[in-house]
Image (cartoon, rainbow, N blue to C red):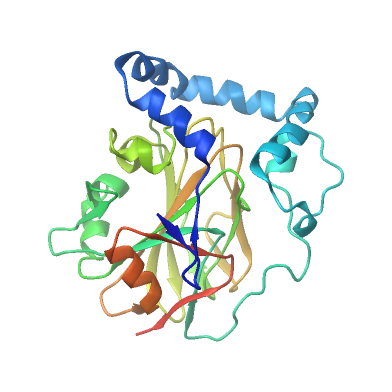
Length: 286
């Protein structure tokens, strides 16, 4: 289930969910997915989505998904990926500039989990270790007792993401893997965040200490596009973008560094995702 910040229940993409149930729900579908989720297939799909002929997919997608195009700059698209990574109009996403306010890095459906002493957390009934996500035991142990925030983007969301605070960052670390959809239906069959390709960095933030941000690739996503290597940044600066497909950002916060807003914690405890927007307050400095 998904709820807005005001408590309204909203529906996810029903047609997409029906197809995914068929693919993940039987042996023939899973054989097909083994091919579709291979990095080479995803790379080929990404090349097509960068090509001029892919523009023919834009209008049908808008009709199916019901995107509110009035929020975006809808001119000059050279390919489907140009449209998919469309820029939002000035003023449509306000960045909360209060220093001790924790903001969302993106438009998404958010769940928040405490990281236990054994560094295991749950996503839609599946168990995950932070060490699986990062493949770095030393770094993973630093976040025991803190929070893991899961920001799930669907295909009709704004696919650019920003920095949550002022600070500096390390180089990006890329982990190769298979590309699966991050739709909750897939989570019932696969340890998605362990299998997918992903890229992470450590953000040294002024107000929330060291934070790990992980961008997770999804089915048919050719590239995770981060704009910077080792660099300094300001709150609200664009950090990067996802190309075609639904995707996810995972953020790890240290013990006693943040307090999450009560509605998000309450929804997460009930297995409900909360709709959040790019730059919106989702918590405070602890």
